[in-house]
Structures are given as structure tokens and as C-alpha cells.
Length: 196
Ligand code: GDP
Image 1: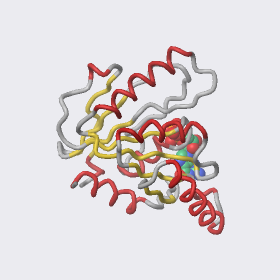
Image 2: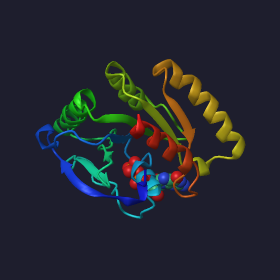
Image 3: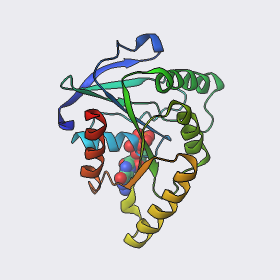
């Protein structure tokens, strides 16, 4: 799977916008500012494939990127902006809930968390939400470059223990978009999901 060939395909503002399910889809979720856009761009080897939405409360979209028709990378809108109006949160719940709950072609969900504070209450809320659908989950503990090697290992084992309580079967790894660390491990996970 050549992630570097990903190109923008379309955006969905409403479940009606989803195109007929086809090639396997790998979705990326995460709290706003966790580093989700940077992780997608690092994996695709591009500077600005995914854009961070820096405007709280603006229209939330699911962006689909196609990889030569063999797979899609799916950028879910970030969650957890402080002060987001209720109707925007409701829209997020409805749009993302519909997508992860019913999308037949969704092969797995990459959840991006800031390695300095993984598994926040909002991250756990998302995982609880994914649980009934039985989606495959892989967690990227990103911005790992901000931790010492020792702190990285401590974080990895503590987060693993906590993750197993919330979402048994999920996997996790350290990641850094800026240092380009963890790319091959994440890429291998994505390829395996697509091939499944
Ligand atoms: P998003 O809102 O989840 O899409 O987050 P962004 O990808 O826009 O990243 C939020 C901020 O964290 C930006 O200032 C990024 O430059 C920074 N950032 C993202 N990934 C990393 C990383 O791996 N290491 C470091 N040091 N900073 C990062």
C-alpha cells in the first residue's frame, strides 16, 4: 500500500454524502490539537494533505483521501474543542457516530493521542463509543519527541495498561510526526488492515 500516493477525494458534511462503500477505509480520530493532521501528512509523506481546522465551531467535515482506488484514508473531525456550540457537538456525534457505527468498508480506526497526556476522558468516550461496533483500533501516542526516551517507555506501558481496560484488543505505539518516528510500524498496521 503506497500511502504516499494518497490524494483528496471528497468531503462529507452529512451521512448522505458518503459514497457507496468500496475500497477499505482507515479512519483517523483524535482530540483537536493532538496531532492528527500532522500524523496523516507524515504517513502520506506530504506537507498539507490533511489540514488542521484551527477554527473551533466551524463546519465539521469528514475528508476522504484515496490511495490509487485500493484504500481510503479518512480524516474524521477532531473532538474536544472548548466552547464549541452544542449544535456543532451534536453534528459531530451524528456524523461520526453514523460513520463508525454503520460504514461497512471501515477497516480500522487510528486514534491519535498526545503522548504527554494520553487517554483523556474524551479519548475514552470515543473508545467506549467504538466498542459496540467492534472496530479495530490502533493508538498513536504522538509528539513522542517531546518526551525523553525513558519517559516514552514509561508512557507506553502505562498507556497500554489503561488502554487494555477500556478497549481490549486495541494496539498502540509511540509516534512522532516531526521526527518521523513510528512511521513504518503505523504503515504496517494500516497495510495489514487493508489486506484483511
Ligand atoms: P490536529 O488538530 O490533531 O490535526 O493537530 P495538528 O496536526 O495540527 O498538530 C497540533 C500541533 O502539534 C501543531 O502545532 C503541530 O505542529 C504540533 N505537532 C503535531 N505532531 C507533532 C509531533 O509529532 N511532534 C511535535 N513536537 N509537535 C507536533
